[in-house]
Structures are given as structure tokens and as C-alpha cells.
Image (cartoon, rainbow, N blue to C red):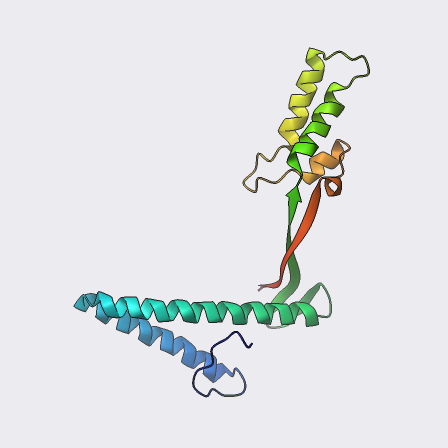
Length: 171
């Protein structure tokens, strides 16, 4: 919490009243924004935006800290909490691929039929495999399941990079 900039004294607990006061403050800020826009006071709007972006950064830090706390203290991966919903731990990950080495291995395995010759069916087989395993998706990541189906272990061609821990709450 040291990253957050502390302002004014607030109650020790985030009571429903405190949350309601925060919501009311947002409504007042929006009314003030509307007045400034109608007055054409772009300078004050810019200053407000600067302060709100700083507030947004601090709010994001607080949200990440709370998600991490929940992730670390939640007794199970998925918990059903009456009145709240389903709370589930999540951790994002991505892979740093050695794409050239993987591509070379796929080409070699598809075209090496043991005869030393490359046939049209070998090439068609390669194209078929490439269509299934290439990152032709929005993520631009190799398709791990398809690679495994073709005998390639994704972990041999990538390093998994774990992201931040979060939780999802579904009502």
C-alpha cells in the first residue's frame, strides 16, 4: 500500500457508507465536469483529467493488491459465497516461443519421410499441420493443443511467463 498516495483521514474500514460516499462523489464530479464543459473551461477539465488519471492509477494499484490478497487467502480455487456469487482464482500466463526452432522442427518432421525425397503429399501434409498449429489467432501464440497432437511438446519450444494473480467474481 506504500505506492498509494494517502489523502485526508478516512474511516478505518471500507463501510457501505464510505462506498456510497465515493459513488456520490463521482456523481458530483460528473456534474462539475458537465458545468465546466458548458462553460468551455478546457483548462479546468484538463486539470481534472490529470487528477482523475492519478486517482485511477491509485485505484488500480489498490484493486490489484486486493485481488492478490483474495487470491492468496481464498481457501480453494473456486468458492461459492452466498450473497456474492462464485469467486475463482486466476493467474494469467503467456509463452515466449522459440518460433524459428519450432518451425524448423515441424518442417523437418513433416518432410522427413525416410526416403530423402519430398513428395507432394508430404508438402500438403506440412501445409495441413501448419494451418492447425500456426498462430493464426488473435493472440498470435502457437496453438499448444494442436502442437501436442502432432507430437511437439510446447514446453520444449517456449518459456511460460506468469502474469499477475487475479480473481473473478460471478453473480
